[in-house]
Length: 180
Image (cartoon, rainbow, N blue to C red):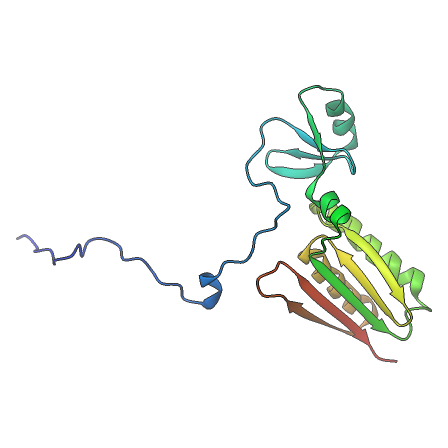
């Protein structure tokens, strides 16, 4: 017994419509990331990060070895470019009356968390810390680092972190506040 096929290509898969509005407008890609895979080795002359196997990583001994070779391309990594161009992807605002009293501890916490993040992804860095009375602005090269810093401040000093993502741009604003 044979089955009759319906007209208009019933056996074909029909294209699925997006189920959520986020799928309609894909997030903007990071303009500083490497678009095409590079052949060979690339190293950042600023921070000594190495681009190898489609990934950036730190290895000082390997950088010293590669920098002597002629086929290695010395360039600037996306994080160093963002710092040079002042292009933050994360802005963390700290509001607390006790910031001045705990200045060294808070900066130590932020730098420690940056070091941990750089161990996983060398492109996650703090661009700058601007201090103005009871409010600080910390700019980061990556949205994930700003979120991570906000969570770490909540754990260490309590308070509350709020996250605001920009539509269309790759930017997150994290506001951490503590009363007192």
